[in-house]
Image 1: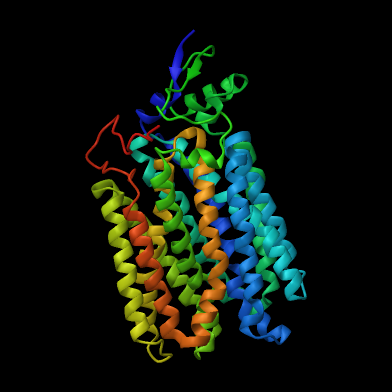
Image 2: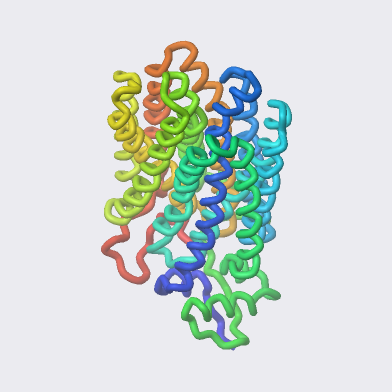
Length: 455
């Protein structure tokens, strides 16, 4: 019988075509997550007209979705550590798809808020499991890039949601958005249940599922006999067999956890002040609905490009310098927008600035998932990522209130100033994280991208 350390096999191996397909499958779930998450912000201007309500009437409905995502992130991450990342991820997709479809039937703000809260449970549970799953499919030196390519699909999905809204809402109404947002994810999830394997590190800890692991590793190019047994070398950290939140606050993780919590909270607060309110802010300033949705698409398009560029730079410079630099760029661009309010006669300038601000801010947010995956070992990775994201969702919950308060009290200058203030706090939160990702571009097989939390 051959004994194999699954961590070494994966971390020191090559990144095969099969593993890239697995990342693609995982990423597709997050594209759909990003689409369903951003449909409401695009639909609200039409809802306001149909129901005869003002912008403030939707603040609670906008907040209830992120509240559900906060709870979904915590419990979804813990569930993934217990029953498997793949099962938890695809179950989350089916859950948010069904509730998104239900939104198409509502005729009141109360039901809208209720369904968005329940939908948020699924949306929140998907992301930590996708990040953990992506990090465990690939070699260590490719981990940050793979996770970022997965999570960057949030703004990519947001881009598709905005572009779809610009085409669908004027012709078919806002309800058609939620019908499409419900049907497509269910179909994809049913396909992925058949083709997407479980996390290899999760399978390695369960003897009865070793045949699944052997089949998966063979597809990835590792020739293993049918009677192979598996181990995974210890990390040197003290963790329990059943991961819990208190494991994140043992002395060796405490400072990193606090830094991640601060960064996720304020970065998600900033990002969702944009995602939830850019369309209604612009239509209130005299822009047409189609342009407002396209502006949000530019924000998300910038986020896709910014996140990919950020991941590539991390391979060259490491995450500390890269993420702090991107945070500084987002502060500077937000201050510029605060000084020059949006003008319906200068649309190109506004689009360019949304690309820059959305790009730098989303780049920080998406690479934070890779950073969290680097900080925590396999046994508590889902719990660590899920809890950090859940803390970020508190900022997400507050975003509609903070953004509306800024617009009511100071107009668009105050609105853009909130981005600058929050990203300054993100900068200092990231600065106190100790286990940043080391540069990997010049490393070959066996390179270590993390500090002792390594895997």
